[in-house]
Image 1 (cartoon, one colour):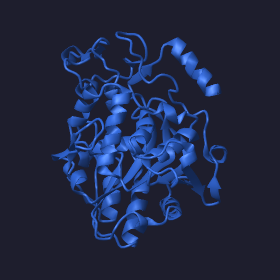
Image 2 (cartoon, rainbow, N blue to C red):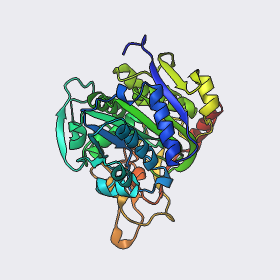
Image 3 (cartoon, rainbow, N blue to C red):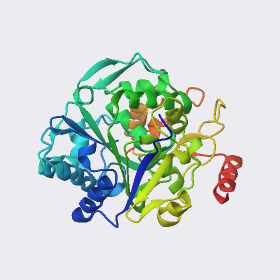
Length: 390
């Protein structure tokens, strides 16, 4: 990408999920980027791609809030866009339609006559231009749509530190191939390269990040809701994630998707190539932090993955008194043989074999009871506190 042409990121405050307030904020944010017509043609089929990680109520901040989805759909309808569909491929065993129903997205889609796309069937899409990956197994709707509106969620992520615009496109990968991808690309750098290639293939036209209530701590599925009261907008998913990093006191260079996103030409992570705007005009990074940031946001600021075998370094652990012995963690584990042993008949808590565990944290993502946390050894935890003070 040409750094002479800066990537614009719009930031708009939004106090809560009141439908009219969210709609006004979405219209303002997209307006600051040139309006919805600058990104989509009225004869195109447009896929609205929320984050639907697993079945969860909107208040849990696991998924994109239905008010944000509804605001985007309403704006498209009012501006004369007729060919709208939606969907995501969840990480859980539940059907996409069931997850969308639980998250309130299905009802919001019905309100604005947005059809459910085919996320239960897959197609192979070759990508000879990929730097790290030459083909993907995509959900049919993602492969067939003319354009994608990326409706991502502001959250922490145990494996990748943060999940935002770039990471949200992983929900376009079909079914079990998502789990297989974690096994094929087991470290954050290789996984980040794959995500960047996926974005280069899918080319989302516009990303809207729902940070009105974000998730901090044990994300992306078991963390704590935290009011950030903000929406972010950009045509550049890397620049959007970079601004998210600055907002929560994270060095953007510690996100593999930012690093490889810039190297591969997906977008900009260099702040000199990013223009931040809100209703008052252009903001510096410092002004944006002062106005919208939250420096104490709870996120791992240390090493993403220690290359230490066995029960050392950061690792997932089960909180026994929260575990309901459902086995979702075992099902989610992408390695063979499984890194968790589980005898459901005996009613025992699943047990990790950390020599098999690749620290992808799929088990932690999919646990519906917040019964898996990431344990950080004391020396690493102390280093994280030092980094936060900086």
